[in-house]
Length: 165
Image (tube, rainbow, N blue to C red; front, side):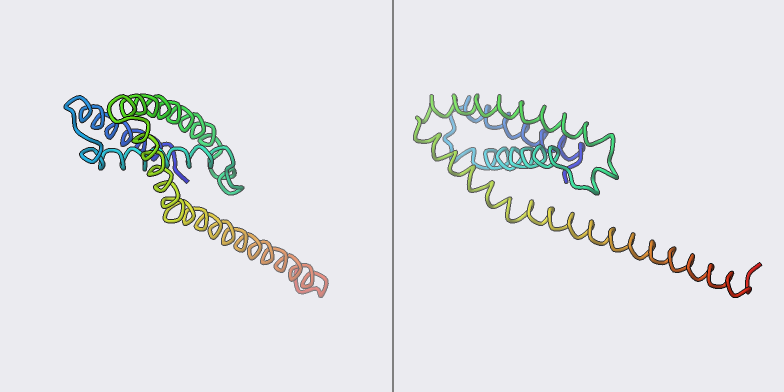
């Protein structure tokens, strides 16, 4: 899961890329000339939206280990998402004004492709890693619990046989 520092880094990346896009529009570059900045901005936007979704529905283990920061993470993700919405609107206006509605629709398709790719490459792996960690923690808890229970039973058996006390 993205922590607040990662959300901050993602919004910083989005802001830097967006500022590069704005400068490119100001000097009259075409969309191909700003593809790196657009790609970075879209990737950061995807990361922030994923962080917001995961902050809304944290895993059981996350709830146990990060009590105070869950709310902080949700607020930061929401704030970052609102900032991205503003940037998206401004970007839409730039592109529609300079290149037309067709270019904006192409950009939206490209953004959807980036989100799908990131879902497969990054977010699914994060979910799998979180599930593995949760299972390992649960198994360790069961083993420790069984060990304590068996030790207690063994102690009671020793007490009953007169070996203790």
